[in-house]
Every structure is written in C-alpha cells, then in structure tokens.
Image 1 (spheres, rainbow, N blue to C red):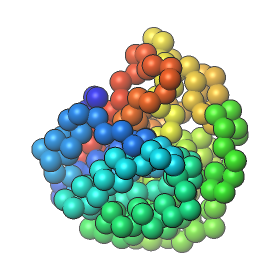
Image 2 (cartoon, rainbow, N blue to C red; image 1 turned 45 degrees about the vertical axis):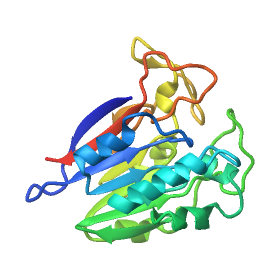
Image 3 (spheres, rainbow, N blue to C red; image 1 turned 135 degrees about the vertical axis):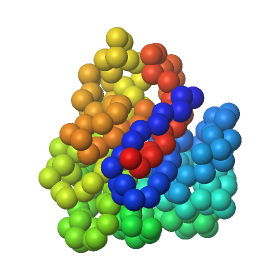
Length: 233
C-alpha cells in the first residue's frame, strides 16, 4: 500500500486533513489503521465498495466502525454495496459512520455529499455501461455555502458532474486501470479498454484514487493500492 499526500485549496486560514479510502472491498491491508492514527485526519471519506458483497462484509463494516470511533467518517454507496443485501444501509449506519445516500452534511466549513451509484437496484456486470445516478438533489447541494466535496464512486460520472459548482469530486472504482503499462491504464469497469479516468486529478476538480484493495483475479501491475491524504494549502 502506498501513502499519497495531495494538497487541496480549501481554506488558507486553517489546517485540514482528509483521508480518502476507495474500494476497500472487505479487505483491510496491513498498516492502514496505523497510518490513520498517525495522521489524525479531520475526516475519513469512503467513496463506496467498502464491502465486497453478500458474505464478504464483516471486515469492511468493522473497519468503518473503528474509523467512526475515532474520526468523522463519511461513506457513499458504490456498486458493491448493492451486492450485499437488503439491510446494508442500516448496517452501515450502525457502525457510526455517516451514510451519504444522495445527501450531504455540513461540518467545519465543509459540505460533504455522497452520490449513490446508478447500479442501485440494477443488474451489474463488469462490461455493463454504468447507469445514470439520481441527480435531483445536486442543485441543492451546490447551493450550500462552504467548500463542497462530492463522494462519487464512479469517475465516469465526471463527464456531467464537471458542469456542477462542486469544489472537489472524489472517486474510485477504476482500481487504477488494474495494469499500468508505462503509466497507461489498461481496463476499468464502466470505462472499458484504456480508460480515461483512473488515477489522480482530472479537470482540476476530480481526484480518482487507485483504491486500497487488490482482490481482482488479475493482479495489479505497475499500480500499487493507495491511501490518500488531502492537506489544505
């Protein structure tokens, strides 16, 4: 696991640190908890796929609970949450984490929202096109005063999200393209071969994490899992 530190222009009058964890998939790597304890972030932000599916959720939910016991912890919903079962929303809430299910919270000058995957209630598959999410609430989110951060599991949504007044969009799902040959990503679900959005900043407002887990049957190549810390400039 690689630890990546990124500057973001939130509020120059104060120091803020946010931790981004994408695509845990019910697998907690060695050193993840210790890194959070050392950094002491103001908030830990999960962009979905905390669990892997039905029967693969215990570690992910336990880790959410551990995070919520020490930090403000926010969680949006990715496609794998909808492979878990009917009661997953309540199980996430029971951890003490803030579930952002097409909604937002306001805290310490930040407005943190969570865009739920378009796969809610829709059949899934590696090569399926990502369905559009519910966007009805986004105008109200964008009207809020403060630094607006949107947790959006699918980076492919950026093609329309970039037109909204959002300061920072945080995504995952692409797993860095799984293979990165000379830095070029090979494949990502929802984007296909040679995906466009896989790692780092795009358009100056969306950051895509390579994700924290490595559960795919095809191993990562040139593409380490990562924990990302955002520090205000």
